[in-house]
Length: 488
Image (tube, rainbow, N blue to C red):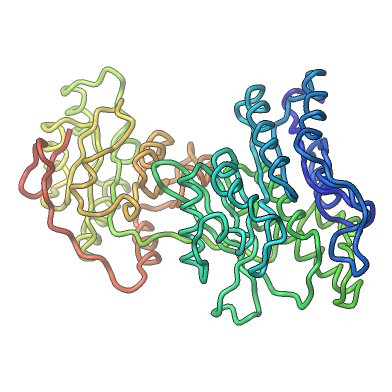
């Protein structure tokens, strides 16, 4: 195996018969190209739902550490992912914390995917003292967590009665350090018992999250091992599509629907084991028929970067004379100029706060406005940045719009990163050189081909009525003009 190949250490339950835990996870992970080493937290005859019980043994914390030390002694800790599932005691769970620490000494970029198996439908099926360890310790080291609705409640202490509660629960976990949270099954009255919702949230920097939902038809049957399979599929597909959480959700769901349908039909919608081997083709090549829907906050203001769109990028040794020259060379009849002036008029009619970000100095910017025959009052604020500045920071307060409701429009990777660092939604204006960047959903929230298309993003995000322009209040200690504050 080459050093670049993904290698998963999967610490979960094992059954001789049936597909739960490692038996449910290993086969799909391997089919999707990941090497898998397994440690069995329990070794049972069958899963615990059988009428006549089960027999077997349980691994404790010291035994887990003994196995782990054997791996370490032979320099076998070069894992890219750790996947954990069902754990029966706190000794074992606390040892997993030690495992994470040691693995990250070898690979600081280790992705830890934790399926916090604690219970379902309002009932715990692990000892209560495990909950505290998950809630106060595991959340601080996990990269991804895949709780069900009940487990999300146990992790956050928040009653989850709908999508808004789910979003809040995810944000609580983000604040603890979990980058990606997928609530694998969400139920609430509006779904009328016909669907389940998979709700996903990813922290993408600047205090901002990307959130998605996907509606899943509800089957009149329940099969043990489905949660283990979901966690494994999400690990595999997020590894393959690290910048497209929505696509990973879609492929995971497509496989799950195929496996569940095949299993339900085989058992006449009664109890039985997952038909996993028979679903090989659906694991390798899932046929997506249900799309994930992005959940965006209401956009109430715009920040548009001029460089790369209306003006060429600023050179490192930029001077006022060079800036004035660039402004003088603008072709007034160009498509970019026409689109920019039309958008300015439309945003004024829509009463949308509108700011400009540019590295031009005061004199060059005034020259630009004269050339474009635009009044300075057309903009709620003008953020004048040196081209080396990497974050927008406090000047955004001039718009009177929270950063989570502000959309930054630009045409370069640097501008998208600048917006993301400031906690803004981002919109990439596509050109021949930046189309690949549009696929990075961790960096780019929206992409458009024409500048005017930004108004469609605004309208789509408005829940009830258009926003109104705020009263502009200058920040303390910052220079501003009456109509459009200039902020360095």
